[in-house]
Length: 515
Image (cartoon, rainbow, N blue to C red):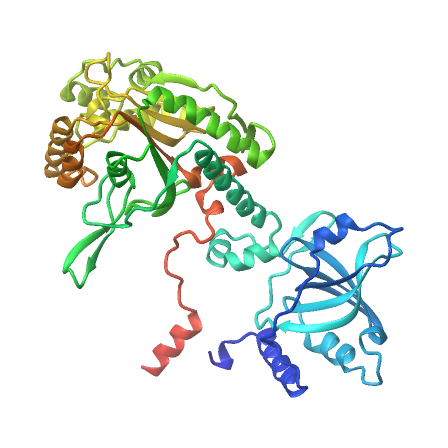
């Protein structure tokens, strides 16, 4: 990076860096710095009548008030912030006062990492602080942090542009209070989920991310190429078919929490890579899975929020079991007035036209029903609701309904107008499964780029025999959105997918001048 591309502050910080080195101070020391306490713990544990407590803290300088021979600064560590009191004569007991007069006052900046040894006390203003006796430079910051200023409770110069926040999450986490809390809560949510599945006796496993066939869902995959084998491979769109192979192999219950990848649109609820939990348990059906899911989510909500409710926008959502249950055809009838039961593909296509929907000839019966539900029903379910008994055309991996011809034993859980979970009584009839795959192939030939491939090895596994099984997939990112009250998926992903960053204008101009 040339000097011409640097701001005035960046140039000054680099000069400070050189000055530190010239004074014999290493701005990026290699040695371990042993921290004995964190900001929040110091404040929580302080007692005015307790013996003086010696501590060692470390973190970023977030603000400074220099007042001649003494100064205050705010230090931010991994848990919060604490005030530091620095006296010139305390940190420079000898004649040489450079550590205070030069290093602290002139060469250190907001954003720099420092270590402080000292003792805990309460200031005359009543603030619990650390009285410094020793200061150590731990890392020099060469870019200035955006500093949010407050006046009369109003924030100025906030780092609040969404694109900048998502692209520079490392800055967002430092300067915006509450962002880190979302991700700490995400960690608690996943821990609660994992703990409950472990307690139920199910085994956490790992299955391939690079797959020869992208199966287990209706989605467009990412394609890559393996040079040694000279074959195209797909980033997985779901873990389903591999997990069910393990049920064939004799596991009672298996689950995987991992990344899936779908080469589809991006919006407030979709990211091309996302985290999903899939669970499969032998000798269970979708009714058992509904009951299990209710309790699972209720306990996760309590672990995350301390109660079974969460607030998203203006909606207060209760995860307390039990949840409402309604079939997809009854839902469509309720919301549109059209009864689709027993209707042919052509009849449903005419209904779509009557509803003034944008459809095309590549859509089969299942896709048409899905579009009607998505447009008129899905968004209306705010409280957790199980949508059940999907038509067979929509569910190529699901067991036929035991009492309703043409339907399958499948449910989707809708919360806050979006799908959160998808579950089946799993299809374990290999002949029926092969026929369903062949129907998907016909849809693919019609132009449906989300139709499934025929996975011959999976059918072979079923031919060896799979016990009655129920399975579920839960979108972790959407679950975290609900539990943290966020309305966009980007807020719960550390590093959401972004468009390529635009080159700096000055660089483009320099390049054109050179030509």
